[in-house]
Length: 215
Image 1 (cartoon, one colour):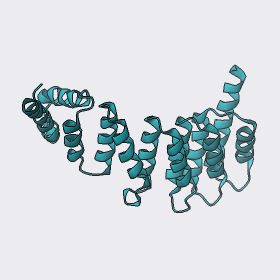
Image 2 (cartoon, helix red, strand yellow; image 1 turned 180 degrees about the vertical axis):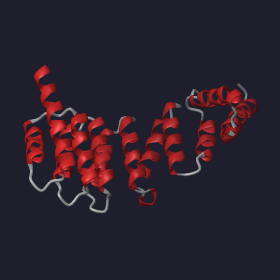
Image 3 (cartoon, rainbow, N blue to C red; image 1 turned 180 degrees about the horizontal axis):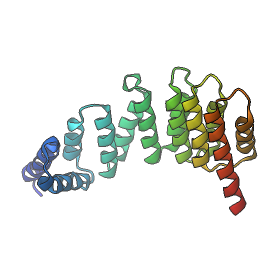
């Protein structure tokens, strides 16, 4: 395809994407086809630059970076995600999501380092730490995830809701190690701990022990 006609086609596809806020039910299929067509333009620098320019904020930039990876621009995609994961202006939630996306693109070691740094940062909200731990689990670092979740669940300085979420996340992690089981057992019987947290711990323990018996 000649350069000028090629750019014209890409421009028309980008116009469809740019008008996504005006999509009707009838036009949605055509607009979504435009996005798919852009994704399939592997190695197309012009299409990649156009997609990135459409991103209005960090969430848009992150989604576009993932799209670039699908288009064959792996290095560029990874560099964008790495920059987002280290950018304090993005906020802790955004940095966590960017780090996990980076790991899913194959740079797991760097992603894990970034996630662990967030987990160890005292300024990071407890809710974010729970999500960081789950992201670590999805990236294959179940031991670090379990350690972090158990510490959050047992931390009496944390709100009951966060401690419950951490206990429930331990069940989803399916990491029935002796340390996790023992920690949940203690938490489920611990006096002075809110009953809601104790119930969550007992439920997680029951589910994990049941799973262990099936193996």
